[in-house]
Length: 111
Length: 116
Image 1 (tube, rainbow over the protein chains, first blue to last red):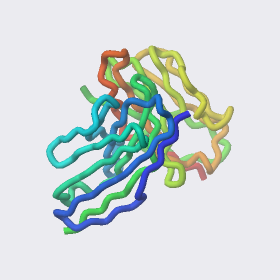
Image 2: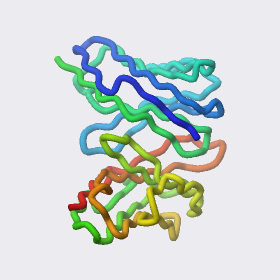
Image 3: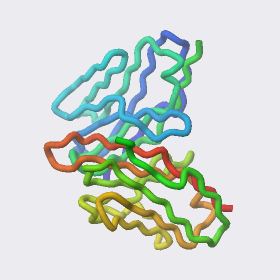
Image 4: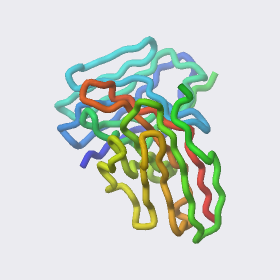
């Protein structure tokens, strides 16, 4: 089955800096790669996703890149703000099946 | 829509007791997922249903865990008997199914279970 590795487990940045979180996956059949943000006391919420027919996708300050050959994908957050502080999860799956999540990255943005 | 609704939000019980967690998915969604979150193991998929039918229960830890979905608007996750190592946050998520639908899973707020 699918296995997703996520790094780093914790990340501390200064407000305004960029943050990058990286994930690798094992199943070459996976074709859907979402990123979820979890705030304290809440359930994870989708922030951006990408399908395998696209190499990069951007939404304001966040972007995701995908390298299918190397089986890795990354989340990029630019101009970080204190409200970006949260736990971020990557996931992978074949379209329509259950998501397999990485173990999460705790992002702390200090002002 | 109110989103995915889980109850209770917090549950404290003693070892050996039966625990039932409840989930109401978003109306119109036909896939439902149960996850367990711990610091050590992250978000683990326990089981998921399509159209009320269990599709993959390979993540269910052992026979003490069982899940049901008697209809499209309700699911339960039961632990009997509970053990301290079951302490975790349990999340339910739902999704519109079908190959042409968006693949987005919507999560509930979770149930924090503490087994003493």
